[in-house]
Image (cartoon, rainbow, N blue to C red):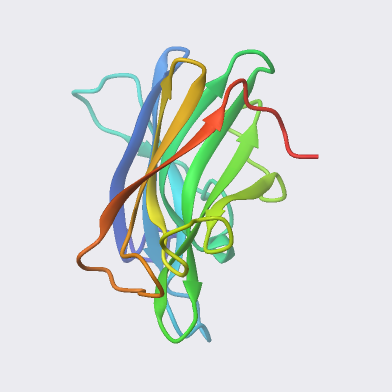
Length: 177
């Protein structure tokens, strides 16, 4: 953490991927914004050329802190040359909790437009957890993409006693219309 930055309160490790001659880590972080009742969450990118060496953190977050996202997992769709970053969104409805899995997309791991996003999973399309869904992790299994996530089930927003869920997306992925 570093005072006066978008990672002034917390910085938690995230997905690491090789990009050219360097490694990128998409880490979760929090800061405070005057006038906001809760902390602001976002993702940052840290870089290194040597996994045994120091990391350099980008001066700006991957997306603005107002996006309220954390915890991410990446998937590259070769057929359209697009990166998909799955992340959980933090909702505030009587308290802070992870209310959805969002996906951002970009052709460039170094440039993410907060407008290029969609909801993947939330209480509207999850059959067993209607309010709280988070911590996504994705892995390709044959011609499908498995999305693992955690949730307490029902209308609970608890951070405890969560279960692991599994959702599937058919491959290849395409951009929303």
